[in-house]
Length: 126
Image (tube, rainbow, N blue to C red; front, side, top):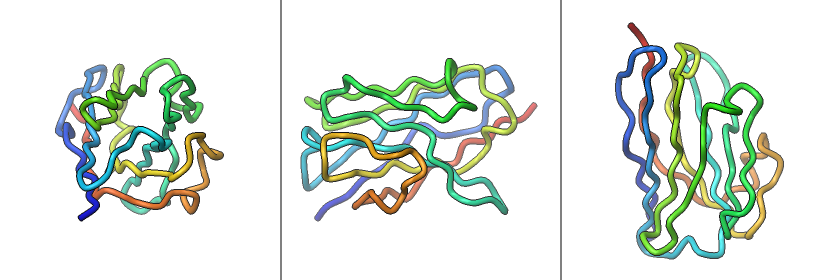
């Protein structure tokens, strides 16, 4: 059974950090690009980041550049999103998604992804 499971979300104060994980089971992530998306209450889904299959290319939405870093450990079949200098506007449910191609699409193209996790909640508040 193909499954993606996100973890690492939680409540953090502004300026804090979290590391999200996206672990796959039932298939390997080696050949696939992985995207991170978020959705805040009352808002649409937003593409946050994408990492290519090799990890050599990572893309970020402008609002997180310099604060978020994507990485992957193919040996662990896991992708990560390190989030630093968090702001209240980063509050959302974060989901990872697999694109069955090695390269990232345009960040906003959620329909280019084939498998999705259930999401993990990130709340930034004092």
